[in-house]
Length: 477
Image 1 (cartoon, rainbow, N blue to C red):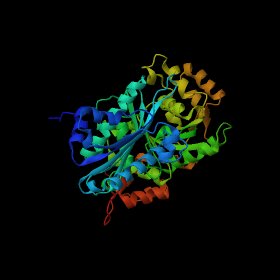
Image 2: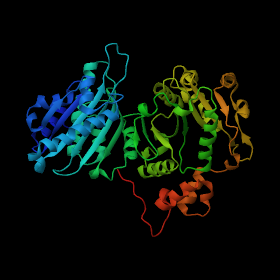
Image 3: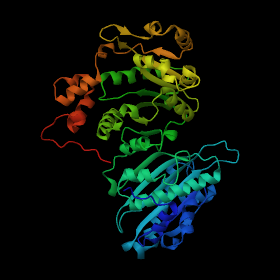
Image 4: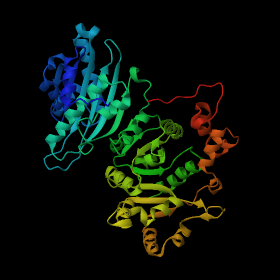
C-alpha cells in the first residue's frame, strides 16, 4: 500500500519536533515564505536558530560580499558559506547532538508590470548526523504562477519539501520527486538539481538530470563535460548554440565529423559571435527509452562517452525539433541557433503526418523551426543499399509536389545548407552494427569510433563489453 504523502504543514511540524535538526534561513527577494511555514505550525524554536532577509542590495553585499548578480548560483553559494559556518561557531554547546543546516534562497518573482520570468536559486547545506560532514543540495526553479503572492507561496512549499527530503529521505530520486509535493509543474518547474557531499559520493548528478526530465519536473536538463549539472537558461543565455541530436550508442566517427564539420560552417556565419558559441549534443527521452522504459545504465554509458570527448549534454523531452528550437530561442534571446541533421532526419521533418495534431499543420511547426535566428546544417548520407550520395541537391526531387515550393523558399532564404566538407568515407558506419560488435566481443569495432571512445568502452565495460579481470565501472543514483 502506497504511503500517504505528508502535507507541507505536517512536514514542517515533523522537522520542528525533531530535537536534532537545527539551523538558519536566509531568503532574498521573495519574503520569508519558507521560514514562515515553520513558524505557522508551531514549535519553530526547536528548528530555527535565525531567519533573515537582506533585501537591500547594500546590506546584502555587506553580509555576503559583492556579487555581479543577486539571483544566481554564485550569490547562493556565498549565502550558504556565510550562514553555515556561523552555526557551529555560535552554537558550540549543540554540536554533539545537532544536525545543523543552513537554508538559503535568492529569488526574482513577478514584477508589478509582469514583464519578467520568476525564478530562483534554492540551496540547503546540511548534516545527516551530529558532528558529521556537511552536504549540499542546490536546485534552480522557474516560478510559473501568474501572481507574485502565489509564487511566494510556491517557494515556501518547495523549501519545506527540500529540507524534509534531505533530512528524512535516503533515495536521491525520491528526494527529487518530493520537491513538488503540494505543487504541480504548472506552478513550478525544477530545471536543475545537484546533490553533493561526503554522504552522497555514490550520486551521479548526470543521472539526476535525466530523472528531472523523466519524472516530468522539467523538459530540459543539462550537464557539462566534467559531469557537473548546469542550469540551461543561465548557461545558454544570449549564446550562439550549435546542436546535434543523436542516439550516440556509441559515438562513432560519423557523429564526431557531423559536429566538427558543421562547427566550421556555423563559425563562418556573419551573425555568430565565436566568443559566445556553445556546441551541444542532445539526447531525447524518446531515444533513451525502449518499450517505454529508460535504461539508466545505458544512458550513463552514452553520457560517459560524450563527456570523454569534451562535449556538453542536453537531455530533453522535446521529441519534435520545432519545440526544442522554440525553447532554445527563448533562452538565447535571438542569437543564432544551428541544428545539425542527417538528410533522412530532414525527410521526417517534411512529413506532413507528423503535424496532424497542429491546427496549422506543417506551417505552424516550421514557423519556430525556421525562425529568423535558426539554420539547419544537413549532413549527407548514402542512399539505402547503395554507395550513391544523398544531399540537399537531390532532396527536392524526393518531396511531394505540394512541398517543393516550401523547400525552395527555405533554400532561397539560407535556412538549409549542405555540409560540404563531410568525411564521406565514414558514411558506411552504422552505430547499431558497431554496438552489436561491442556486445558480442567481435574484433574490429574500434576502427569505427574515436580512440577515446574505444578506450572508455574497454576500460569501463560500457554497453556490456565483455572484460575479464577488471572491475566494471558501476553507475548508481
